[in-house]
Length: 423
Image 1 (spheres, one colour):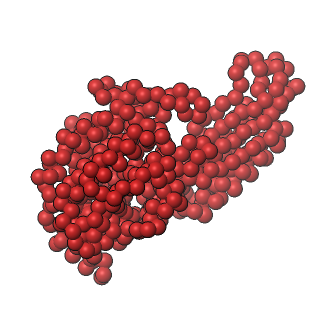
Image 2: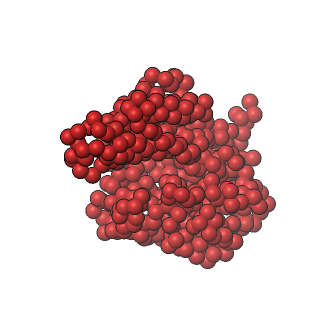
Image 3: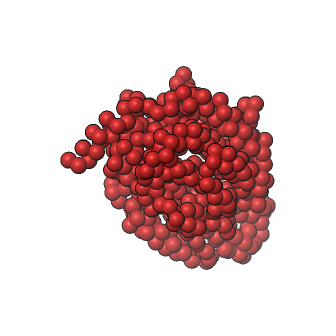
């Protein structure tokens, strides 16, 4: 009954859109920022140029700005003209080790080093648009700060895609370094673009939404031999093949998938250099996704058990390490229902799409574990294009309909303005 009352209040309070002209006027600048970031992408924990531009922009808007949190993170505080709550808005800044294949005048030609290899760098997940949308929302809100009830915290976060090996980063490190210690928001909101929906649509879900993620590293150590005399060695390649096949039985045969989905995937395998030499060792890396912490522990245990025993059965040795990643991203149910009328105001109720669980992961989850969070996706595929076969996020052919991005600015602004009235 209480939740119904809250939703009715929120509906009446969020009927009017705020600062429509200012939002419309900022669109060209937002697109300019987005194209600049797209053309100059930076990998995780290396977002130095991006952070400098963001910090200078927030400073010009008169905000209190903190830099170099979690290496390159930037946080701006905007104090409104009226008393009210603290609300946080978050955008991630890092790009991916992907070589762009989209024919654009502002396509990325950047390269960098990743896992010891020279790679192309591309905003293949849309973080360039996230930064641009939040910078634009910051400007609109700063222009109208006397009408804001409370304080807005703008979080520009590095390393959402994961810190480089041997480094810490992302939302977890921002929290570790105290981003919420002095001023903790009552709510935190995050937006992600997705090619899986047409422009103008928004994907929304309450409760568990995106999977927990861990990655693993596995080395199979055998004994080198000439390929013509395999009996004189211990073949780590054959052993690795058996490990990969056996690991696939964890989810298919040892996990109750009716309780919660789970995925274990190998992403890379490297071993040997020549056709007639059996190498000493093979290395593999992979990912684990799930929505239940007990299942997560069971998968970890099974991975250790299978790799150890299969290796021993072949006379090899397995060195196995799991790197704990992000927890499940959970949309606070009360906050989600409270702010759904705001999404309807911006996108139209008919454009709110109930989302299935997503096996992708997001370190926004760390923020949402500290304070109630709401995370949602906005579509960026042109309406005249079929979604069938559309390049997904992380694809070298990932493409953004820039006309869709102004909705992200709008919804950031409306969430800030509606939230205090809905309490």
